[in-house]
Amino acid sequence: MKLLIVTVVEEYSKDILGLFKKAKIENFSGSDIDGYKNPATMLMASNWFPTEKGGVESVLFFSFTTDENIEILFQLISEFNINLESNNPIRAVVVPIEKYI
Image (cartoon, rainbow, N blue to C red; front, side, top):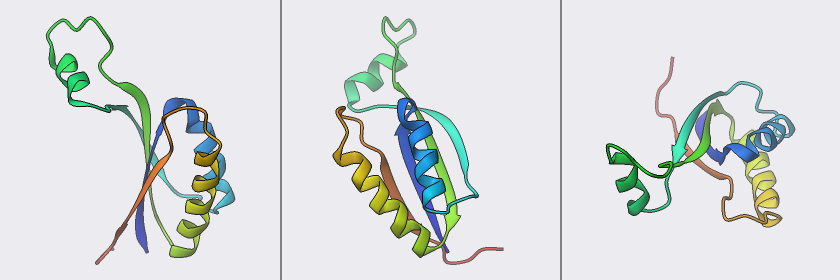
C-alpha cells in the first residue's frame, strides 16, 4: 500500500475523478487548496490588501491504494497531460507507507 497525492486545478477536478474511476481508485479524500507558481504571487497573497487574487483554485486528492491502481492512474494522467492546451498539468506523487493501522 502506498499514499497517492494528486493536485489539479479546479477546472480539471471532474476529469481526475473520472481517471480515478478508470484506475479503480474508489476510496480517496480531497480538499480545496490555492496553487502558486512563483514567489511573487505568494508575496502578493501575504499583503494586507492584495489587489489580485493570490493563488489558483486547485484541488488536492489523496488515497491509500495499491501499486497496480497507481500504475494505471499514472498512465491515464500521462495521456491526459499530453493533450492539455493549458500550462496546468495534473501532478501526482507516490509516497511509500512503512506502517499503518
